[in-house]
Length: 340
Ligand code: KG4
Ligand code: ZN
Image (tube, rainbow, N blue to C red; front, top):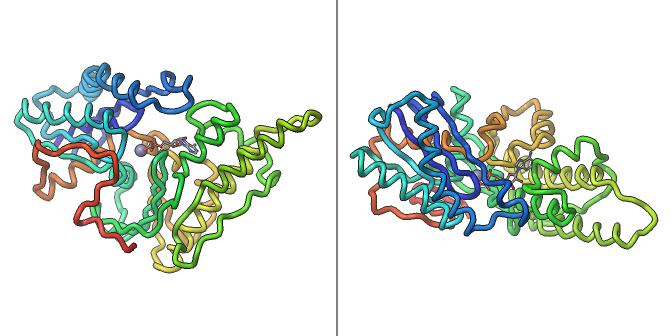
């Protein structure tokens, strides 16, 4: 079964064709980063307009690269939530129109569940239950996964998402956009102990939660101190390394608490921040765990994870009515249990 997956929740206009939830026949990601970079953040109006302009070409390219004819597509899926509403609507409505015109099933996909599925595109034997580490620009979620659509959220950020913190710190230091990858690169040449940012104090019933506003503010306040120091030059590399270390330490405190309490030793990561080299290196030191990271191209937003996850629903005989609409927020599916 060949599924066309469309992803347009933020600033990547993406389409992919995946066979039987596994085999990536094509995975086209057209990034809008250069168009948002001058604003150092995603401008929603520009994003949705560009999706509208690009979506046809991106889907055409996905078909071309997969050497698949439009008649050979068995189902079409698109991200329905969470994300920027205007952007989501472009991909979702494209997919619904495609499904209607071709009289094939349509599947609305949750973006974070798709990030969690991404590792399945490359690994065969990921068994439930496992702990999910979902780290992106908009969300930070530590969860227990019992099925592809059955996750119990154990911990989240009580304020900023981890990727958002990377992006905002990079923005204040004028490092460029998006900040995560840039900080990751700079940090490789920096001293992670140069600045000691405090760990957030969370109450005992928040053992799996994370918080980034304190770290973000501390890193930004440090910039004011640098500006007032007219004698010494500061090192962007040291700030990047110290900030990154703290951000990852905060995340791993929550994750390691969840591992300790649940006894679950398999961790599956997903989302843009899962590309972070320091995060990947530090977790891999835990030899008692099986930690599965998608390869870098599948960490960020892409259509393959959408098409892959859609196949799981199709296999169960499920699809989505064409009346389904987009939602900017995480939608609570009935079968997504929350322990909170
Ligand atoms: O999943 P994603 O592509 O889009 C959302 O769903 O938000 O994640 C984007 C986020 C951005 O905040 C970006 O700065 C961050 O992922 N990111 C990274 C790295 N690469 C991307 N953060 C840290 N280290 C990286 N190497
Ligand atoms: Zn994402």
